[in-house]
Length: 238
Image (cartoon, rainbow, N blue to C red; front, side, top):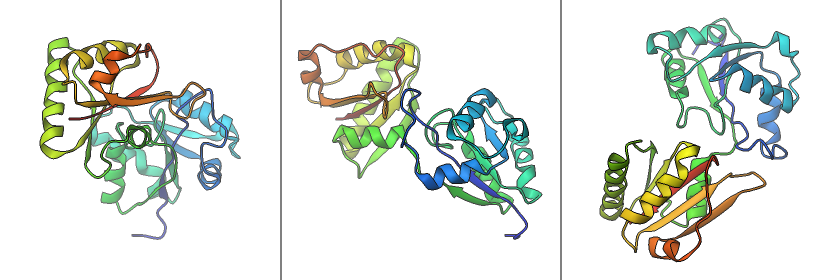
């Protein structure tokens, strides 16, 4: 690796807008405050995050490049131009850890190909926090992102996750678009076996954080709250 190359720092963000204090370690904050060049999914969100963090760089001097799910793979390397010229770059996701459940992994892969040093910084991961709160297997687990939108396909996906979980003794982790949370929960409690363990973690690190883990049979006996338009992560173990 050439010493003149900059570093790609993977900078985690807050998970919740209503609780930003003491969530990120001091070292992560201090590194982010000094970075001029950034790659993000949304410039507006990135600017707000850096303003709240207290960046040492005037906001008008910050340089942003966008990396979204629609960015063409052949264009990703061009986002690393500052690092090739000796300037370090920060990459952030919309929330939580970059390159996990977002397109940032493409930038990390390109950085490795170009010999650019990659440094992941410490911060909250909703996926791992939900797994921690579930009480399910942390030795064997898999993350599946978002399930299908179509109701029948979603039911089939849930049953396949349950079957794989039983076979492999593996916790299955997945998410849903916030306005479809309640529909997913309703479907899960209908199609999963009574003995299957199911957990929901909502608004992690926020003032309205909520976690519950139990069997499907237990869920059916309780009054399940609405999770409409709330950030949720789901786990199941057959």
